[in-house]
Length: 353
Image 1 (cartoon, one colour):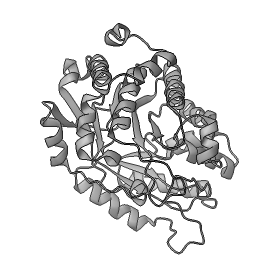
Image 2 (cartoon, one colour):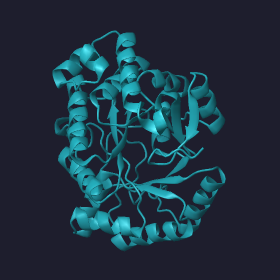
Image 3 (cartoon, helix red, strand yellow):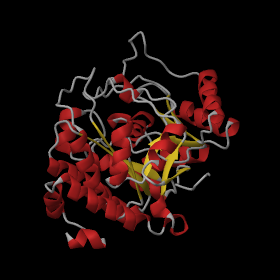
């Protein structure tokens, strides 16, 4: 389609037709849109550069009371292996991350019904004061909606107080599919689509950037995926706070939600469609964590310009049976083998080397 090649905005109906194209043709269009999106980045060298980040995913608790059917990580307070992280353990994990060149902590947990607001503020203040060079990329929108219910305060106040205590940016977790009919089936106790978007809108207005995500390949339709993309595109038009889109496939092992595994074709097709549809998103991350290193590399020719994190620690997806590993040398090899320049970045896509 000429409109896609020249950078024009596509409609949901056009997106559905694009999804039906041969994979190689769709990938070529997505790669073109990647070039258009990156042309102005990094002093005109955006098309030559593929980035990655060194960070660690620290789950501060696995206690959660929303019982999502797709999650193998959560525990109840009564489970023997439930936990809330201690400050010494947290410090050790951050020190290890810094020693490996890490610049960010991805801080997420379950929806713990008893942790107080002051507990979270003390945690953030401790991290900021002891490790001032490390960005705290923490608390998904569904966690903030949970905080609103537990703390009995407006979202603006909670997010503002968390920012003042040290929060630097917000991950897009909990997005799943932003269609409530789907959310009712896979996570009936979790935040609704409008809640997720409201958190992001408030965060962006308060000066906190975020990522946007989509977990697909379970009970949703292609039309549902397009509706999800449309909702975050509309949000980005309004608040302009999303730094990147990250899509990944549902991992079924050890979960109560059973669905056929989405293969590489479905993953690459959906990522390519996302790059084309999300014309106002500067970056798209490849999901090697769920797809493996080779498909993660191939995704760089299907619209992605970033390989994400080396994931020093990852606990949620691995509980569902996916345990791919990546190192910085792996990142450099995968990127360089395609003729791109590998560069480490921070959360805001500033180059660090």
